[in-house]
Image 1 (cartoon, rainbow over the protein chains, first blue to last red):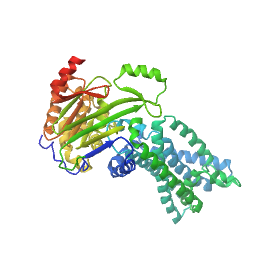
Image 2: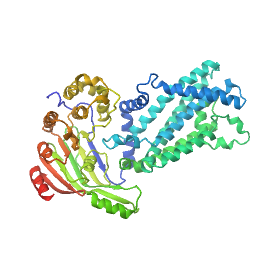
Image 3: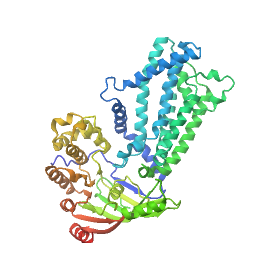
Image 4: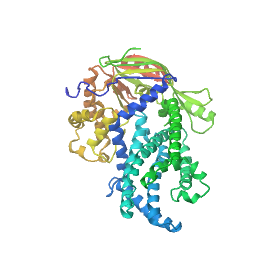
Length: 285
Length: 256
């Protein structure tokens, strides 16, 4: 028994916990939540990975079902739409492939953001963990899914032998920007959905419309003079900063400017919202 | 406010803590009012924007010191679990201040962080991570935890094959492996078998003497008497009586 009652060593350096009503120091508390959550990476790393494993437990392919189902979709749609649009398949299929991969990544933040906190109710109601942990956890698992799907892109490159060149590395900062915005938005949607349970339903239907309005299944050239349809679509720009480099093209300055604008807007709105309503999350779920 | 450093004594202080829940579900106000007022202990009120709120806790002030083993008693819906959650930092008070000094280990639900498809060992690791231990510290304590659970080879197979009693042992072993300073328990612990209860009690006693605090929410007066030396009687979100366990229990049994 003596060994059980070990002296406290490294963990719990912070023995003090002070919570209080009112809005004093709310910003400071919100920032502490974000930073202390980030430091708990062994926890959210594991939780995020288990989230994926759980879905494919006891199946033979495991998480590679993600890759397999995506590959089937890319091949099927690629062949069909290349025929419908009368475009060369070696041009259209890589475009569709990268577009779908990236869109899947972007849209999952929107559609799964709704269950960010409500899905973690059993944790939230049982123990105090920084709320940001749940954001990092879901963002991490989305990144893992993207990595699994990325294999298809490599396969497509090898099959069609059109190498994008060094410009492809520009996709990395693009992906990080998308990830950052996705994490922010899912935090926002997660809180909103915990409070208003209709939000996830609204988002799901909106996301479907956006999918068809964004040049993923069709090339932006088809818009001809009506480019405003893509210009005013924030998702087009988010998509382009990842898709264009992977296809060997340089994203335009406009793409980056719009994304930076979206990012700063996100930081301000989500920051204010999280600061104001963070303590309410456990009451809402 | 007192400072809380590594060597400070363990302490729980609540000052004028109030917690109120807004009610978002549909239904007319009068219906809610009539149902809730009769059914539970909380008070109904409406806040500034005329939303209906349940005042689960009202102006609670109390202090626990090292060595206290406190039983929270009261009828269903009196606010026992809410109070535990405020101490755990899960509900931040809507008014007032809650201060704790000490490592907190909440044990409200054996299901927390339990993934049925992974092994007992993996679940221990996951749960310990949630409780805030580092990977090294978990491995350091793994032998102790495994020994306490008495699960032996079962720890290698998926947890979904475990019985409730086995899960309880696993949860309890992890929750207490780092000698928590503030141990918060809901009454589910009573569900264990007699042998386990004796063992659990022994373990809790060993570190309560080590300057810790135990807060146990329970309906069972027997359990309260066995585990605790102090009691707080909560009724309708307010402290009705607090003090020595026997006094409070005596008053409680005549009052109910």
